Length: 310
Image (cartoon, rainbow, N blue to C red; front, side):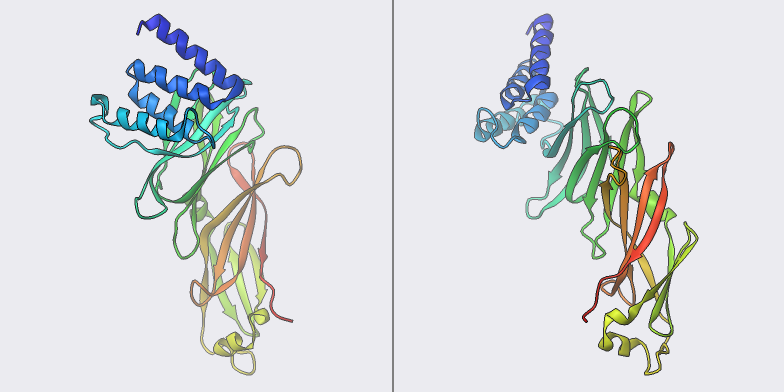
């Protein structure tokens, strides 16, 4: 293909995708990229086309094209193309042009477990692809959310992945377009390292939770746990039979909420409080995080417990 004609054709389909996001133009773009020998780009575009509920010309046809590209000489080094797990569109850099954001990964054949999860961002104006890899890049149910967390012009990116562990922990990352590039501004590992606690059972059916990061103390009334549970821990006078220490689990939920209704999202972080063992849930630590211009700092923190029988 003549280079001038190739760029002209690519520009045409990129423009149509920005205007309509119709699956037909994704198919045409993939076809053009394939004819130009841009196999990797064509495979990414086909995965985007397959993400539509009714892809063009059909899911079967697109899978045939993808299989052909994967078997081509240009794919000898990488024989397996990752799948697109989820797709979102938003204006990340505030230039008024929609960008494409998606997660790609390799799925295990016999389970819903995803490996090599990667954030891929296609700039809507330049059509340039950025590939962003996570420290923790395997897990279940990877999801995307686009919204303004920082108050700048443009959307930020929230990625959440379930670890599959017994504590219900998640991996979470937030990325923002700053100083001309996409930067990571939150990760769950840093949060877990910062937000540490001490949990101890106390006499008279109480548990004390110390939040070291916020220098706050919470007292939980354990009577909601019921007589059978309490009789295992306390004697008839409400005195502990033996010292018991619990713990607070790593981050298990991170939810964007616009508390102030100002179109800027805060984050509500959930951590489960465990008692004698992991399944012995005492409640939840709920921390509201707000962007302060440099990091997501704590706005407020509460502890919640579940209700018991009347």
